Image 1 (cartoon, rainbow, N blue to C red):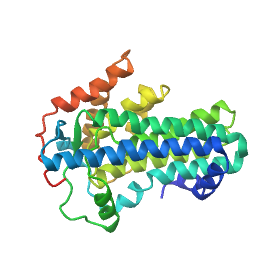
Image 2: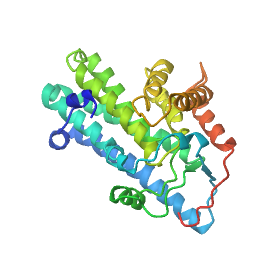
Image 3: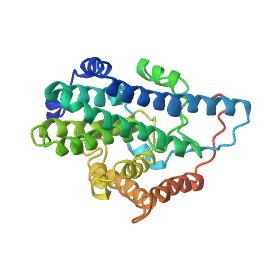
Image 4: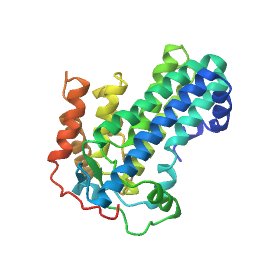
Length: 297
């Protein structure tokens, strides 16, 4: 356990639900967010999978694995951390709502609007080029069996896990700063960032994603939350796997150099949001890994 985990906002999910349903404005924001998630992640992905089974999909599927993925050890037990990416933001919103009261409801509404955009913007990329990685034929744990059952695994680049957890720590920091409360909750915000690092590491430990999925997500996040700039993105990536004794420093440096160079490729300086998203699509379409045949997807 990292020292900062003791400050991680916890136990607020149930409280968040109760406060959200109590007011029409927050309930409406939550319903809109839920509809986006269901439509742009689940329904869209299942529709793509169905077309692939019929052989009628107009969208290609790219295998986005990279040889550098092998540098990161396999730790399927990290699925426990991997699955906390939704709990992270729900606990955080509930925690801050409990301490700040009804005045925080406007923050909840604004936060959910941006979080919904993470799903819709990622969906705009997935719809133009599907991406996947190879998973074991048999799920290596009960937690991953659940993941394999509900996720057709066609939406890898950019990683929604990375988008969600990095949006969570950064956007809450921005929103609390705007209300003058960021300094008061500095330890909690630092713990959220630390957990975002852990969850991002877990996507490679459990082989749900590739090194390609992280910098592309951070490049997209800089469009959704413009304050999440190159400095923030590269500082975040620089912390990945720093505490993992099994990752040799030279090998880790190669992973970070690759992710940094990919970020620079898909986040052109001065480019518009459309330029950035097109750069992600161009990267995917030109990626050298073979197209996968997913007849059983």
